[in-house]
Length: 319
Ligand code: HPA
Ligand code: ZN
Image (cartoon, rainbow, N blue to C red; front, side, top):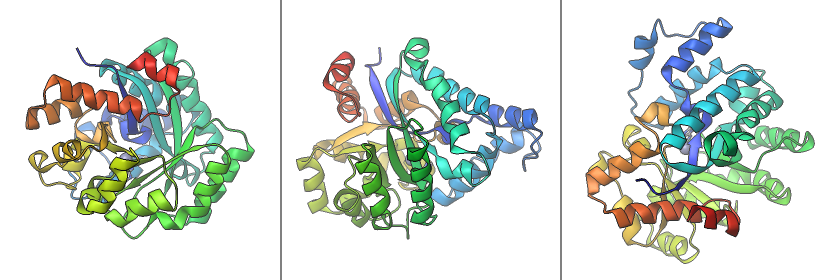
């Protein structure tokens, strides 16, 4: 039996399974670079973050209308429910769609159609986090945020993702201030490929409530001390880290060290259709590699619930 768990780091665009990509391209008459399902499936070998993003950003072009966004969200929820997920905080990359002429309204309304039925249909409570591409100008993120706030579109928080190195959190201070002032939750990817310095910036300049990945924090003992002291949640994605070669092998993954150091770590799938599995596969991979006992697996699940944007009664329901 898997303990109830929250998934806090999953990109909706990273849940598009190859068959869904081919099927939805057919629906819209979109010519993808892939000749067949097999040709697409042969592309899932990555050398770093950018090589993965290149494939992710081609494939997400099949998402065109509200039905597509609803369908992909629903498919994720079905799969997550089978993995034991009882609460999910889901990222979408707004600029991945608006830059192709798909309005934020279409994206958010489509996703919400699935989220609004998620407790009843899948037993999963949800939050929706709009993520910005950090390798686009901060002014672009600010425009997207202002539009969503002005239009009153329902999101719960903002995040920061895409190519990390060379795009420090400090570029996004104004965007994050605006989001916080609007009452949104704030998180950011930091310390995935980028240095520990970016984690400091995310904490001190963006005032994030959670750090996505954060594994390179271990290179800076003072930062570790700060993260432990303030119980800053780190959303760790083991299969992603191995597939993107952020770590060489699972055996070298820092998860056990992070637990020993007392960091508030949770396990997450990141982009499950690309990295070899959903949350359950991530748990199974670290259990198999490190021989984690049932108590540690329960601790990781409890950490995920403690790291979620839930009030105390919702938290109690999951503990
Ligand atoms: N890092 C940065 N950008 C991303 C990721 C990630 O792990 N997944 C999807 N977009
Ligand atoms: Zn991510």
